[in-house]
Length: 322
Image (tube, rainbow, N blue to C red; front, top):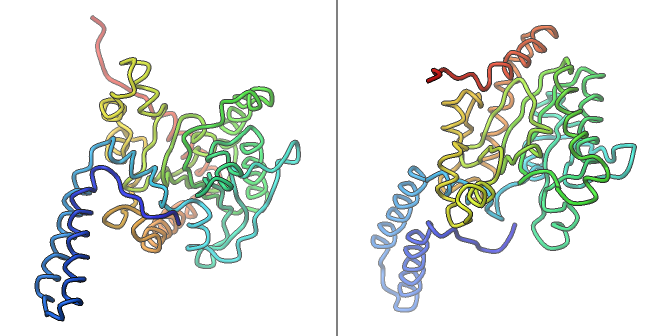
């Protein structure tokens, strides 16, 4: 994990934590029993943290989703699976480390698990291109999905990307075509597909591995057609309006549930998944197994129809023409 990192809105908690350390140091240096005061301070810290995280704005949730200590795909794979065998390459160009995947078991249940991967330092960020996949990343993901379909193994995707890489190399190797093919082909896979937004769910980069029977989202993750900064730059000509854009975009789990774009919100530990990755992984694992059990009761035809109906129902609005 990265070094200590705090978000701007967490300052009241960190002020109290600083006072707690000073109080503990004073107790040791002066050999004075202040255990009661220390416990009161710890209770106050917990209460303050709970109050903050129970009332986060959309923009604050975006900041939590981007926290550098937040668990990434490989962290969740290590915590909630066994027998993971990573599969590399798209058999066309190269192995894109921005998307990782392979066969694994979750409590004995065979799955193909695929997800976005970010880095935690300069070396790994360069290696993973900051979680922004090239076309070969999406082609690798589709290769793995088709392999899972061939062997009748359910698919779990973990999404955490600002978006697909939009550089010259991506355009040269046809990024739009790679994502479009993934969208089309995922509707033809006969195995259950569960998609989970674990951090950032940005644009087509997220949608490229985001077609599933169930769309779940972590409590402090977001899913959006564009980043709040990008939206603010377009609509208000100023990134300073990112908080306003985040609210208008309706990108949090609560908003997505109201709009029927998500099927469930996975709770996180108070303070976000980065404060207790093991607990976050346990919650994710429970949600995946629950939804997988429901989907495995369906026939292949029902799974295909369920996925089709889910996405056909999106974007229905009622209104009148003046």
